[in-house]
Image 1 (cartoon, helix red, strand yellow):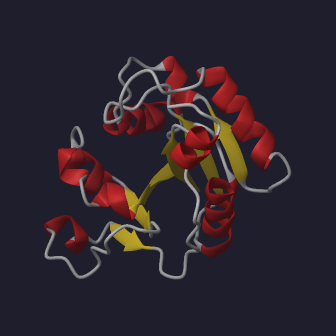
Image 2 (cartoon, helix red, strand yellow):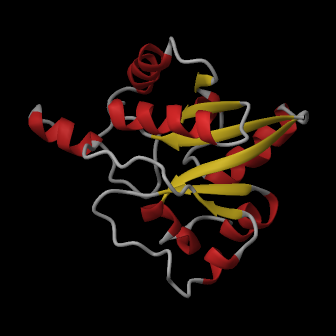
Length: 175
């Protein structure tokens, strides 16, 4: 059974932080592949700021084209919207029963994970690798019950990147 990591995001635009983290994850975990899943929309982000999905997918494809183990993925483009991670993971299991999926998420998202649609389902059925986010208050010592799950692993030693897609957009005069 292949171990596949799902690193979802808007990638609006993709940048060296996304690529650097993806490369680190594939080199330092037991994953066989890491799929950078371009989200057509994020229910927790404001509408109207995303570049067209095909443009964002092409950017990810270009950014990772020469890195073994990384794959740009448009799986969510073909699912009902909005894109909820629980639904995506459920559909991935149906489409690829020979794979074991692990969700990759930032420390900022694990802090609000209890607001995600069907977060209990995800927590009970999938491993979650959590990477640190620069500028985020660490929750590693929190009493947050999700952190006590045997399915949650913090990626200690993962690099921090001082860049964000929003900063890139703002530097280009985009929202």
